[in-house]
Image 1 (cartoon, rainbow, N blue to C red):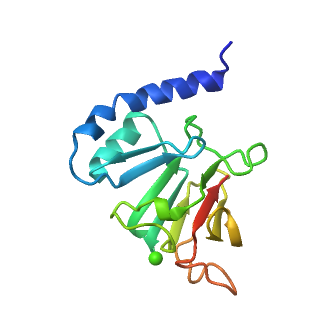
Image 2 (tube, rainbow, N blue to C red):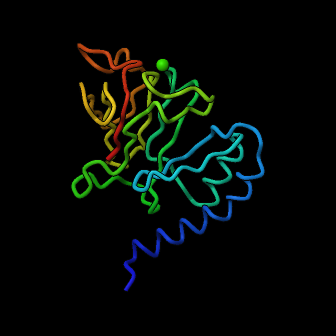
Image 3 (cartoon, protein in one colour):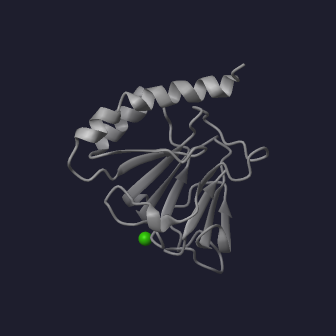
Length: 171
Ligand SMILES: [Ca+2]
């Protein structure tokens, strides 16, 4: 018997499938992405308008967004729950959202994310935490925060994690 989660995931994947032809037809660079935090499935588009339309159609609210520059500017990459949740469930899933190697991920402006993140937002009331690691595969120094950080040069006392993250988790 299928669990409610399985049914929800199936519905989500079907919703994604409806957009696949759009992606396949586009010849421009598809760097406007939203990534499902549990499955690591990314949906990428050529413009912010296409990305926003996709998120709206699937009723997706990003739980966290990473930005290349401070003040939530520059290129960005957003992360959502594949199950349509508006909250994180860290107690049962320690690292439900993750990117073990940011050299493989790009911001919306096409720039590789590794050692470039300078600010991030966490959806208010989501109970999500962002974990930044200075080395790939969740190794090295770790920075943890439960609220948005407008400037990684200043929101860490002592040691700056600006332009330092090589992997990240959200939970
Ligand atoms: Ca940066």
